[in-house]
Each structure stands twice: as C-alpha cells, then as structure tokens.
Image 1 (tube, rainbow, N blue to C red):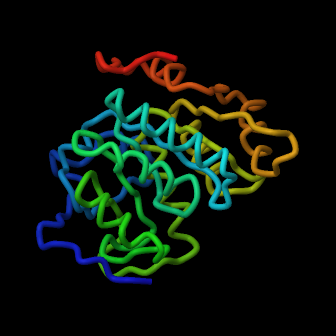
Image 2: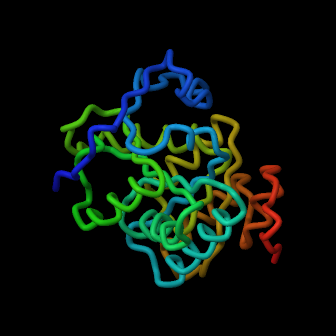
Length: 233
C-alpha cells in the first residue's frame, strides 16, 4: 500500500454541509462525513456507476472503456471503486478524454492511501480530473468490511449502476442489489454463457435488471439530457 501525496486542500464534508450529497440520505446509515479530494461541486453532477470483475476479460475491459467514455461525453460523471479490472478501465477511459470529463473513485481506504498499489498513478489522475471520496479518515488502511460499505456509497450516489462482467458471488452484485434496494436503476451487459464472469450479469437480468449494450439505452432510461455532440448508436 502506498501513500498518495494528497494536497492540503483535501476537505471534509459533514452531513450538515450544503456540499453533502443529498442522495446519501437515502441510506439507512449515511456517512457522518466524507473526505474528498477534488471539486465538491462535481457531487451535484448526474452520476452513473460502472462496476465489474477484477479479473475481467479483454472484451469486458473494452466494453467498460467504451461505455465509460460515451457516457462521460454525454455529460455523466462516472463513478467506480478504483479496483483492478472493470473499475480501473472505466476510470482510465474517462481520464483519457481530457478536461471537461469527470470520474469519481469511492475508496475503501483513506483518500491518502492507494489500494491496490498498482493504481498510484490512476489515483493521482483522478484527483486532478474528478474526485477521490471516502468516508474513512486519512491513514485508514484496507479491511475486508470496508469494501461492502464503500459499495453502498457508490450505489447511493448513482442514478444507475451498470454491471459489466461479474461472477455469481461478487462485490459488483452487492453494489447492484444495494442500488435496486435504493430505487436506483440497474443495468447489466450480457455475455458469453461460457464465461463465468457473465453469470452475475445474467442473474441480474433474470431478476429485473435492464439488459443494455449501448449508452443511449442507459441515458434514456435515466432521463439524462444528452449533450449536442453525443451520438446515439
């Protein structure tokens, strides 16, 4: 685990603050505080979460990148958990679009720690072009129970959650079910029946998640106005 050089303008937002995201009040246990590095005004943008397997296939990574970029170009802020695999692919894809496109990483550590450590440079890039967010104080390292709790914040902040590759038991399914319980829309990309990481998505579709394969399906379902430059597929 590595320390990230978080500048002194990292801030703490308490529940009483006007910058505290109102969508978190839908939780039974909203965080008392959020620790944030980045522009808190971005918390008011429409957010779409993209989550999925840490051991994603090349096709899954490609799909995550394409959806993340096209949704970000349409004006959404892309939320994920900065894990390896699908999460990282979504964050990287938005960063590559350059200024004016935003992504937020919801962390299971303090915002001054990077986990996994392979994402040191990604963490720094997100801090410059989006938000690092955690309910955990600085200096808090990763614990197994931090990540399901992190997932509830991803679900609550987002208008919808898109799952791209997930095993039958995975953190992505926890996020999707939390989102459904909160009344958020859940979207799942179908995959090959021979890919174990497709099972979770197929189960979600059976349970009522919306089958999706193009960004316009997601944006229209969430009633997010498209930017003029966005092209429907």
